[in-house]
Image (cartoon, rainbow, N blue to C red; front, top):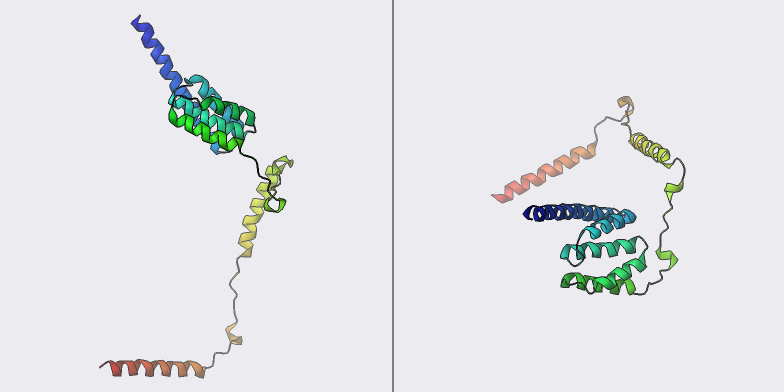
Length: 183
């Protein structure tokens, strides 16, 4: 009988570790904008955990946000309704706040506030063009550096300029007067 209990604990601790790994990979996928993958990983983690546990509630809150990000608003609202009755107060409080946000009316934004980003992934052979443009950018940056200009000294006026001598005399007199008045 003791052997069976130890085996059950081992299986549950293994499933807990797997659930934690799925939870972390789901969060990472969500943060990277891979919402469908996040939903899959978080659903797997949620299936391995007890729904009434604190960790199970956290996973389900993340699953609500992943559902919403993936465009599955109805699933997110249904899960929020369930989580509002969660035994852990923090989870139920977060579920109520998220539910309130999901139920809030969507505001229409004027078109001039929006910037449309073209989808370059649909362009065939886009990767080769991106590499080509990146290489052209690097080579054009090298070409844009100005080369030093060599000047023929025979064409430069190298005669003494009286202004320089006058400036040196004025500076010398100023320094001398400062020294004289400092004593």
